[in-house]
Length: 92
Image 1: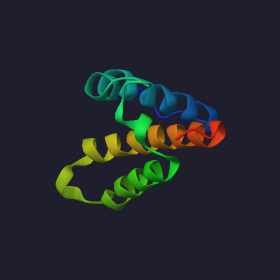
Image 2: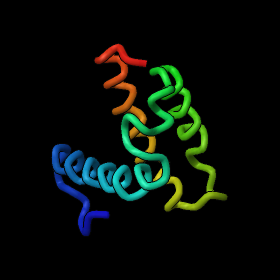
Image 3: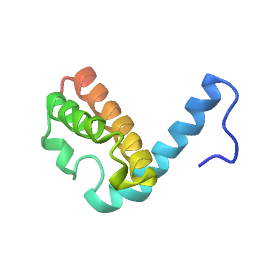
């Protein structure tokens, strides 16, 4: 997490994208593998959107705690990127 909240939208995006990068490299890839060897290769764009919906529905469930809620937002961003490239490349 950045030490200070960025003061502009580009700074927010840069800091957030760095957090997503660290989430993907430190959490997702070690657990599920990288592109070409992960479960997402079998998913289409709709399956990714369904995953995003799952994490959005969990938002505000305080039983999971703030850290897990923040991690869910990183997951949403990661799935959004995967969805974008699946649609852009028209790949499954």
